[in-house]
Length: 584
Image (tube, rainbow, N blue to C red; front, side, top):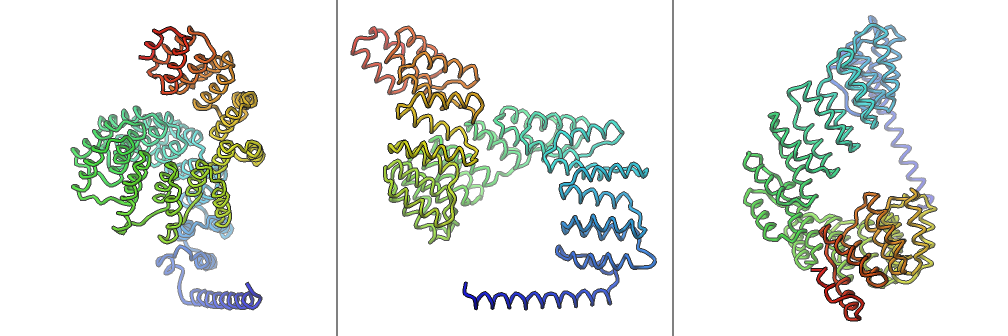
């Protein structure tokens, strides 16, 4: 910006500020001279009228006789609604100084302002003052304090407050329980939420559906879908009728756990009970069917939705595009995308990202880049997820120049690489043989203060194993077991077992396999197949037979690589002819 422009801008700002000050001062003078505080209290205040509210307080403080505490409370409440808690707190002190005693309403307002400004301890000190003065705190007092603790995530303290209330003859109402349940569910402690719900049911007959819906959501997010279904049934037993939000929450939980048939039955139950599904209901189910390749069911569901007069929204179309891309049905996904454009639906970054990711995973990088260039024309801004998909795709294609270009573009746009970007880069460097750069990047990530997740460490272990640095990979794995990093998952164990097997370290691989099960990280089909192949290459027949039987008893089967290796070893005569029968 040039000097002249800066000077003009500064002059304009000064003139504007001067004009505002003059007009604001004039308004205050007109107000103070012509309008009584009673009229102003009756008229109310806007959300930003704090200066006028302070003027009213000053006028009230100068009045003789002084206004009643009720009038002061009305003014303090208006200030609190403006979220100027600091002003309310200071004016409460002034009230006492001019001789206006606080009543329970004033003190409740004061407690609320302390809680809202993250000073819950001061709120409790006011509670102590209430009792010291011989006043009786009411349910509003306790509800404000409980809500204040819940807002700070201090859930166990809120439960302790409720217990104290009961012991001292106070009956917690549903507002108090509502604040507690909301806070507990936010923390994801479904067991405690259920305990509180049981207590609510014992003390109140009219527990609202909102409480049940919140806890069902908490259970589903924690993977406890069976418990969520049980709670849904318990609602009916108590005569509490679920609403569309309750149904949507449980349908979402069932779909997330792959129980699409149960989710469909719940949709039918919903319709039979005259509770009309909305687009959200159908979107989750439809996306689930598409991802599971159940296209006939998806089409029937779509037709049912249209028949009910519901109009698909952008989110539903995006879910369909995402599901089709997962199935690599990219041409159909593009058709839906183009239909959205033709019908005038607003395209979002998420919509573009779903299709770009699909193209990148399928190696169709030119089409992915065309979509990237189309985004600005559609008024859509690319985000870090857009570039992550493209970077990963170009790494997979071995086009390092394109990767470099994308990173320069990200820098130009002010997009900071996130943990996923770094993980993609780490994986890409290993896969393109730039091992030293990968090791350097991993060190930088560790020293940067990033909270590295297990995906990063697993990528590192895999890269080291592929580069035949199995000992270094195993050392890193052991550090993870010692708690120096994220906890290994089944993929981490499987990759490490595979690396040890390829190195011929079968004893270490078997020990790690046992440790894995002891750590309650149960092996999957990939783990068994890697270990079986390792023993087929280097081990004895008896160990292979034992592993195959164990694998089959767990419901897993040999994959193509294992069957191919089995054919090779049979041809070489290392195993008996009947050995093949173990796999069938």
